[in-house]
Amino acid sequence: MASEVSGLEPLEECYRKRGSDEMHIGLFTDCYTPQVNGVVRSVKLLEEELRRLGHRVTVITIKIPDDHRLEEIDGHILRIPSVPFRKWSEFRLGIPMYNETYRKIKKLKLDVIHTHTEFTVGLIGKHMSTLMDIPIVHTYHTMYEDYSHYVFDHKYGKRVVKKLITTGSKIYVKRYDSIIAPTSKTRQALRSYGVRNVINIIPTGIDLIKFKHHKSPLENLNLRRSYGLSQDDYLLLSLGRLSKEKSVDRLIDQLPKVLRFVPKAKLLIVGDGPYKSTLMKQVKEMGLEEAVVFTGQVPFEEVGGFYCAADLFVNASPSETQGLTIVEAIASKLPVVVYDDLNVEGLVMRGATGRLFKTEEGLGNQIIGAYNNDEETRRMADKAYVIVQGLSKESYALNVQHVYEDMVKTMLMVL
Image (cartoon, rainbow, N blue to C red; front, side, top):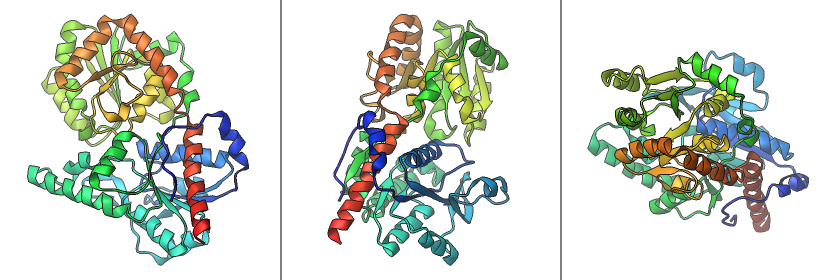
């Protein structure tokens, strides 16, 4: 079994490890480009960095019908037939019934399997690990308890689904050699489910360089103007997938209170998702059309510009496993107001590196407090920026590589 680890190895070790034995790693995921979400970003980043460390990487993921662009760019990607998920149409599930799929995976001669989903593509990964007798690790990206409304909206139904999730999680990971959790929050939840596997806490890293280069004041002003915003507006930024569990509605609920104390406050909501129409309706019913702007989905390459142009980043979600947008905001030196949860433990500390809240009223108060104490708020952002430098993509990949190496060594010892 791999030894339990937590934290990150110093960056200077990263390139010294390039001499490690080359491995062929299979990343199994139901979410991948052209989809846009946190899991996709995590898998893509890991894929790229593992290659930089000298490994071969093949991504096993879902096929999107009629998207011929993918056939031209895939190469190192094996896509399998898929169907849409019933209540989450942009999410697709792989169909694991084709013998050709298993033959193709077997021909890859993988050394390690790393699954990033608990759904069908993950089950294929588990089956191939057993069939090929190779080590397997799983990253637990999502707290599914917070997504039960996609299956049942009824209160009783949600309780049943949550019970199935906790029991199912324990059963699903039972035969894994190792588990990766992005935060102590995730590990704590898995332990409460009864999971007894080794759990390695390895936060997903980000490309710090992409968020380090701040745009000029003119570029920031031009971005604001393109959405009808002025330089004098106090710009609140909400960025991410628009789904119920992200709790953007709570932020909108607090906006009238914020506007009483901060008349020039504007809320820029960047992203798209199944809850967007509901949020737009909420804004209209509350008469907040002049204070709220929806951008829709923007390319990831342009995300950094929004952090630079904003005055305050707000994340109201209590369901984050890590919250990569929080990390990105901090890496951009943007002050943050976020929900007080274990996912930001050691990164956002109350009154030191950011502002935390537990209640909706507290959310509004913290936004107003950030505005009224701008100098103190900026100092917090500077301190948080120093801490976030440890969450680089290089450190992330290196620590995942160590998990792979431990599993392979353990298997060789058994043999």
